[in-house]
Image (tube, rainbow, N blue to C red; front, top):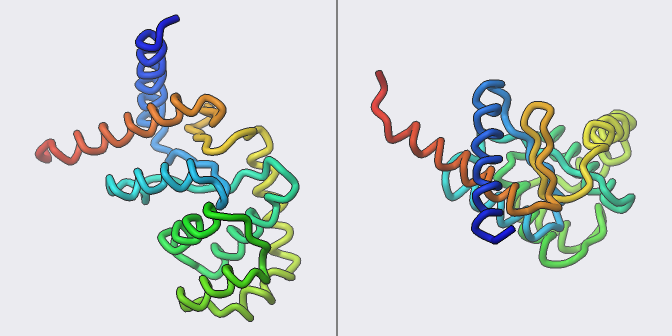
Length: 184
């Protein structure tokens, strides 16, 4: 199969996924890892086009060490840290491996964002945080690569990144087209 044929297949798949996205009225779920450069770039693309709020985020726990990132996501959500701030953490984390929650880069980030590190550390130990982390991990048990996208029951696996990218581009194009049309 040629590259052009492959891109058309990906494009058609994206249109089908986009149609099912529109039919379900569910927000797509973007599975990520804070240390993933491709996840960061995809998130940047969503933000630049102004549709980042139309997506849900969920960390993928593909490797045991990623459980800490899932736990951090739960703590951030409990502290009501906005996604825009979490996205900034993704930019820091994707540049190099950090150790949570005591890493100096992480502590510097918290201070700059006005997040109370002591409150975060006490929440880190809370049983409800561990329970919520386990529940999130269970929901994403079938995710094997990041970034991946789920629309309804359909998972677009990050191992086929061109499909993920094409789907995101199709969603952005549809959003821009909707905004360009005058309201009836």
